[in-house]
Picture 1 (cartoon, helix red, strand yellow):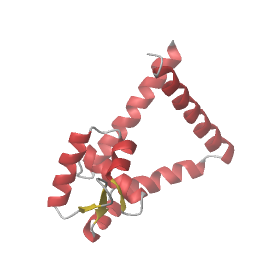
Picture 2 (tube, rainbow, N blue to C red):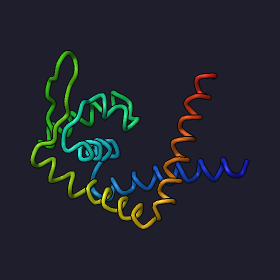
Picture 3 (cartoon, rainbow, N blue to C red):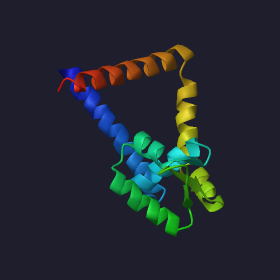
Length: 140
């Protein structure tokens, strides 16, 4: 199916583009995704949210967090039970704004250049694809 090849190519190229941007900004891919998630969450969120939203393995996230923590970019805070919050320091917020914040502004600019109907269609179809893929994966 030609559409599937094109779809997979586009998804792969999108991932590669974000990876290349991270490298261009002097960040590891995992660090970039962590900073992106934290900036999107106003500088603080649960570790479980980072794991869920990035799709990066827990061991890789933990290694990246240790490195970012040692650089004074973020800190971990114990929450109720076994939950941990990941919080940007002031230096971390500055770094996030200067790096992944630029990416978020570019993404918003692109989406804002589309009509409301185009944005809605894109998001609806992406959600539909994801929902159906999850449902079908349960049958494997």
